[in-house]
Image (cartoon, rainbow, N blue to C red; front, side, top):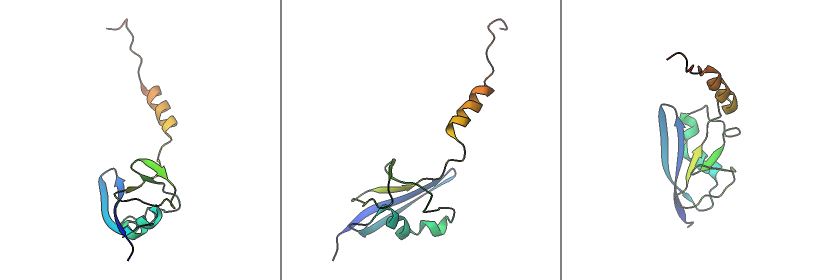
Length: 101
């Protein structure tokens, strides 16, 4: 019998976070863990070809072999380019005129 490891699969939305605890065979990849979790059935917007995966905040390849107690995170794509968002916020700031106190 193959050794089992304990892992978690996490997916977060702005209003909800789902965390699945699983026991999977030693040698399971990050991509396989997502499939085993069934999370894609609950959230059909997850595209396993385009959503990045990570383990504890660090990007990993889908074929990365998991270790005991790893947490696989499914990352959503950015909706706004961070540079563009920063530029818009900077333009919206009204400069303070020291003469008009």
